Length: 549
Image 1 (cartoon, rainbow, N blue to C red):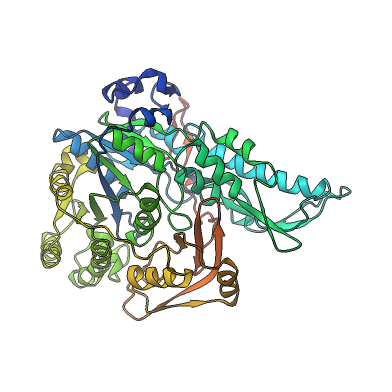
Image 2 (cartoon, one colour):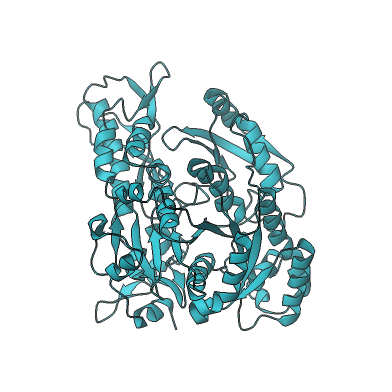
């Protein structure tokens, strides 16, 4: 049965039933129909003296075309924790329309571990991402209008791009201002996907509306003829952008198929942005639940690294436990098996592929954190291969759990829930990969060598100049890298030979307050695959959405 069909079989509770169990006063809620609501950030002030719940980060090995089920695991784990009597709240990212109509077809979990209403969440939801798109493009319009109206700020180079929440490679580079109107200056521009926009990062890292407006004002849109930065505040646009985003700043609450609370808010990509839901949503969840399950995008080399080095610095906290998700098929794929071969017994490929998992375990331990491995179980998994995995985990002194929550919901994640509760009580000493006082190159090289396992870093001439211009800024770095490999080459799955990371460009995002480092052939505007998911998405005869999976 398809995910969307499973979701439709479940009768959802009114969202007010969910919020009543969390004791959220009605005055702090704004409902979007029966099953969705926003929680006012003002409620955080009321909860400031309440003890924070335990924070559990769900991450994974490097993703494969076979799918590892990280979001499904996070949902199942939260349901499993509630199943064993714990008060657990889920905190996830909002899906982007780009992947929904591109390659993924949806990002709300799978089987009996889903958040709902899944069609709404996967599509327009409460309009947050639309608001970010509008804010981003209003700033672009104001920049070009300022130049058209006389260019008082003497803007000579525009660096701010437009955005749209779709995969559209044709928009990566465009020419604008071609209508021939007097005073209109044609120039080269480009589009990012909305979830790669600095606006998304700003909203997800902002602590409140005041912090949001401050960060928006700090956005650099370009440079004047003297090479001086021109900001959003210089253009007097920060107020308008804050107005557009004021409702989007409030986190959204929905439910799992087992009627447990799920806060879903913000959605930066992890390969081209920092890959975590909003700080406000995570803080809200920790005040409402004794356990909070959250995730970071893609593998632990991307989302988890940024969660720990960027988001945790902004929240001044760290996870109490980490879950690393994998499947037996994916491990064999990382060991050189093809997609078809990965479904068959292949002990040698498994032994090679396990090293991808071991590297991610090593990285989590390197942060001073405790981890458990979650294996999404398939019917055709082989016991001999599971036994081999168990031997490796024993050597690493890491527990693992076989998950069946796709088919059984929270009941299929009870074993993982029990192990996570015990793990949360184990002592740990969190430490970052780099210090904020390190220079930019040192930060990059520490992440490349420690997290990716690279032997070094190479810089293009352009990147060298950009690093020199930026200077030593005491802020985190956000490395844009392929998700498929520990290296910057998506085809280098084994990473069994020495490799270097190539840095192509470096840019200071003064609103997000981190330095973006682009490596390999990473793009901030993805393209559609040969057969996009959009070809399968439709309405049936009763106007129900079909094809989102």
